[in-house]
Amino acid sequence: MLMMQFSQAAAEFPAIGTWKPEEVERHIAFMGEVNAALTEAGEWVSGEGLADPAELKIVRAGADGAPVVTEGPFPETKEFLAGYWIVDVESPERAIELAARISTAPGPGGRPLNMPIEVRQIMDAPAPDAW
Image 1 (cartoon, one colour):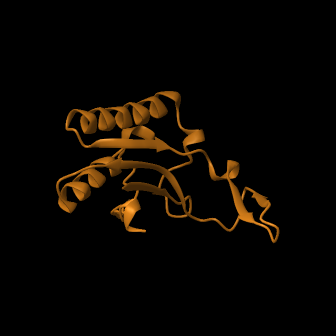
Image 2 (cartoon, one colour; image 1 turned 90 degrees about the vertical axis):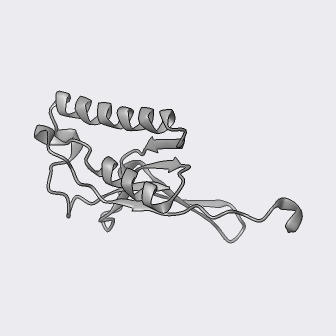
């Protein structure tokens, strides 16, 4: 799994909401090209961009099991997940290669964002009959 992290405190570029429309279009086109290349290579499983953390909700079970919902935004949140890809690749090295490619997504002025991409293996679960 490749996870694109974002931190406004660490970012060397403005929030995407302040980019010129053509810069946003270039960024999204890059992501589309990455996804198409992963599909062509047979490595694509799934992936999505995620909404702003101001729209998220945290849910916990209350004492009676009923949901207890905490609304965003969360001012203490400094980093958040901006999007993810689930890929099926031959080696950890290939996953790292893909993460580095994704990290070069263009931002304002076409400059690479160099956003951190976390690479994490999805663990296999035991077969249902093994429980």
